[in-house]
Length: 88
Image (tube, rainbow, N blue to C red; front, top):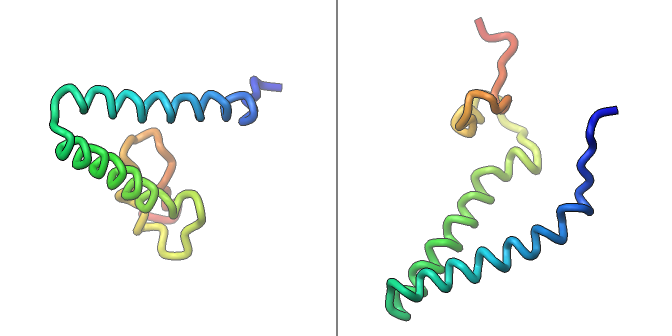
């Protein structure tokens, strides 16, 4: 049996990682921008997260359209996102 990674080992670390990332974004942004600019930075981060969720949600929740529409999601050649075995 190969090495198994269980999600319950990594889930607590994910909480701390997200909290630390939020703290770092706030702390670094507060050095360089004003308070109004800080809201813009946080809005840009939130928009990026929402867009990333929207973009990759078909890979998580299922895709009921032609497989060719997923070609744009294959950012790296090692990702087996789009494979048309019948394409000539």
